Amino acid sequence: MTIQEKITKLKKEKNAIILAHIYQDGAVQAIADFVGDSLELSRKALDVECDVIVFCGVRFMAESAKILNPNKTVLLPVLTAGCPMADMVDAQAIIDHRSEHPDAAVVCYVNSSAEAKAESDVCCTSSNAVKVVRSLEQDKIIFVPDENLGSYVAAQVPEKEIILHKGYCIVHKRVLVDEVQKAKEALPDAQLLVHPECTPDVVDQAHFVGSTAQIINYAKESTHDQFIIATEMGILHILQNQNPDKKFYMASPKLVCVNMKKTHIEDVLASLENMEHEIILKEELMNRARISLDRMLAVK
Ligand code: SF4
Picture 1 (cartoon, helix red, strand yellow):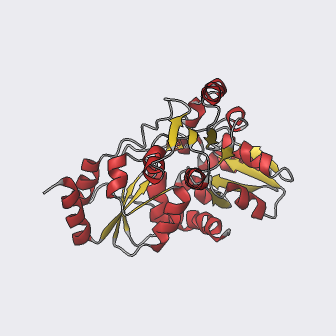
Picture 2 (cartoon, helix red, strand yellow):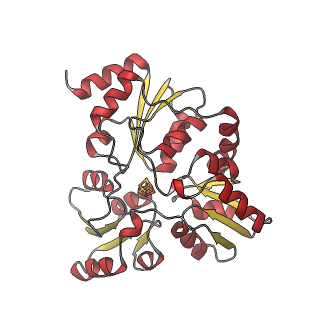
Picture 3 (cartoon, helix red, strand yellow):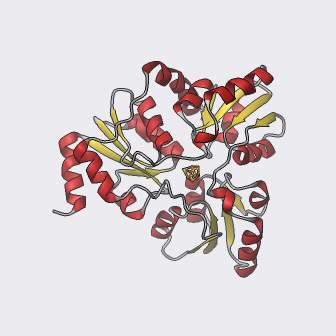
């Protein structure tokens, strides 16, 4: 029996489904029941009918799935798959921001711990951050943890004051403005598609700025046939599959998230066989974090 067949058999036996982030390894995406970005996966986690969710991504994503599905077993195949940006803000940092700006609402990017979500007013993803900030009645917003996404939101919502936390994605920060300028010169007919976790000088060079799902959609709908991509290179799997006649070039070879690449198909099999590694969170923490996630999901 192949690994894929073993996984399919175990999924049936355990009534499990596999969710995978777009940045995952191609073989993992291929065996997943659903592949998406953070927002799509959050929504999917709410809808799925199963007893077990195997979450192929990093820890904060599996935590969100658990918070939204407290009665289901959520498994993270590789225990060390974390997100350095999520570790850049903790509950105390948010309490400190609030004491400095008591009239501000706290918007927490989903790339954060359950503790940070519990301390915030509402969550957002890179797909809906602008909408979430606009939906709030407060004129002052504390945005955690990503200062680059926060800067992008601030430019789109100039009527609000955005207080930035100094976190960032170590992967997207590696793309340099010189690199994207050179790539644009080398490929003058290509469109530059940039994720808002990149630094503002790189974002300023873009023909289109969007989350992974928005970039995928843009490339599909576009009449252009060449694209320079400034986000994690796992996105190429879907881009090339969906657009066999279009060409995609990475803005930088450094756009690889090692944490997103830790999960291999063998880990997914081991996870289902041994029911490891189960996400366990305190009920009180989940209840508070769920309020922030639910508020985000209610924003249309
Ligand atoms: S790509 Fe960046 S934000 Fe996403 S998991 Fe990796 S380090 Fe975290």
